[in-house]
Amino acid sequence: MNKDVERILYNEQQLSVICDRVADQLNRDYKGHQVVLVGILKGSVVFLADLFRRLDFECCLDFMAASSYGSGTVSSGNVRITKDLSCNIRGKDVIIVEDILDTGNTLSYIRDHLGAFSPASVRICTLFDKPARRKKNISADYKGETIDDLFIVGYGLDYDEKYRNLPYIGILKPEIYTK
Ligand code: IMP
Ligand code: MG
Image (tube, rainbow, N blue to C red; front, side, top):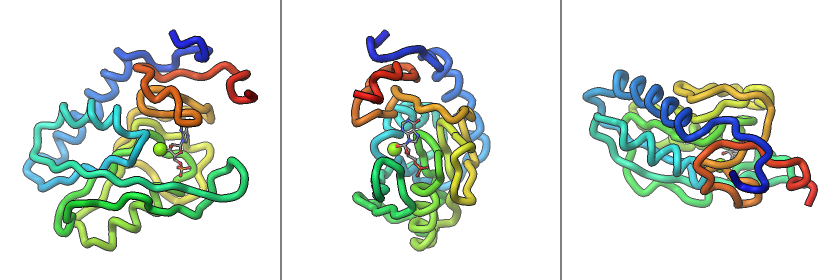
């Protein structure tokens, strides 16, 4: 285990079971559809890679990146798109893939942005949902797990751009945040 991690919340095997379950739901709902999976950089990449390989319907892959800026460390509602889509989603069924739905600021902005390109549908698939901190009226159509108001890292999720490469989801030791 990484020396900065206090405890593991989901190990590799548990994450794999979560991916199986979410992929089964998508495979049932999207069979025969023209799908574009849109991964939100960077946090979603590990989940997306595991999920994508479990999908058995035809689907394209694209990415977007957004940053949420404001005063201090608290994310504001001011979302800015830093990387836009590269493929055409008009008439397609879009699935946004995200690591974690927290305040909802990022995903509600991205969902509205994508809606302007006239897709057939836009749904949200998130690995984790943290409803306690929600600020926007948004919910996930597909979700791995609902978690308490905890800050988690690993499996794509970072703290200060670190720990994305941990193969599990962990909670950092309190002293790491006060450094
Ligand atoms: P929202 O706009 O507040 O919903 O922010 C969502 C983004 O905040 C996610 O895509 C993550 O990048 C980040 N985030 C929220 N909670 C956590 C966490 O517990 N660990 C790591 N990143 C998080
Ligand atoms: Mg993120």
